[in-house]
Image (cartoon, rainbow over all chains, first blue to last red; front, side, top):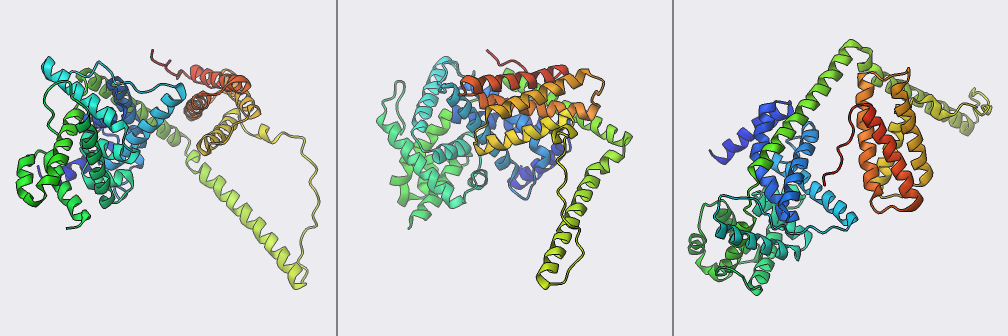
Length: 193
Length: 251
């Protein structure tokens, strides 16, 4: 399916969901749940928190979807603004409770063997630890582009910035990630960076 | 080539990599002059993308979908109930518009009278204006003109504004909110029972009150914490009586 056909299909689904069509709501959920989950895991680091918070994001979407308007932003940008607000609000709550977001040992089960899982977990932990050192805007761009799979244009609209600005931020973020990843010795496997 | 142009090239390679359209090597052969700069960045990008490629547990996804659809059904049921109520009592549809119109006409009349009086004074042309006579102070408490639900709605709106603006919410305000919520809870048992729309509005306002007070309770101590807790309990009492008690936090 071409991107424009994709966009057309998504528009029909979103419009039906706005009208309360249950099948369309389920379709939207299935389309976006993995992407929102990955975005939240990229921002929070903990899979269990990410599962709960992803559910909460969809409940917020349900509350607000009638107010969504196509002229303001693409649906994905609108949805990830809600996800961003949920992350910020969760961080504020955790900050008030004095709880940091630990990286969990119990990462979700992907269809991988144990060796691959360990490797994957180490990589996620490394990425998370490294990303923690980045400024907020750079972390957000990494989350939106790499985890949520948004394009530069969608990322720019989700962040309320220009596309040129997003390109500069992502370049800086990846350069910084590379710098830190190169300095850190890897436990398993050969570093590709 | 300027910095902006390199960022465009990098973005082209990055998009192709993330979408699986081109490998790193294919991108590097497209832009051989930039291989030295592009290669380490694209490798770091690939490693970052691999680290973030996580899949939610199927159970979590399924559980979330069920809750999401259940919430959607609840929302639809409430909407239908509102619409049936509005059909049964058509005047409700126009009540808000009528109140707004009366207020607007009143405000316009007041402004016109004030302007005419000012003009009359300025031009030396006496306009017949009623002499000002101070109204005797009413012995009626203005708040008593409101129902307990309306009082709670007003106070929760004020609380929401204060929380949003980061203003301090003082103890007397919290005590007032607790009193109003307790009155609302008592009203739910009394002869002036709320209709379906009133009950839905009460659930909505008490839920909001619960959330705001929970936010406010974080980091509060002493008398203020006690006042928040009492007001929170009053909101929860309202929710419990309406069969919408908040879910206890997960352990």
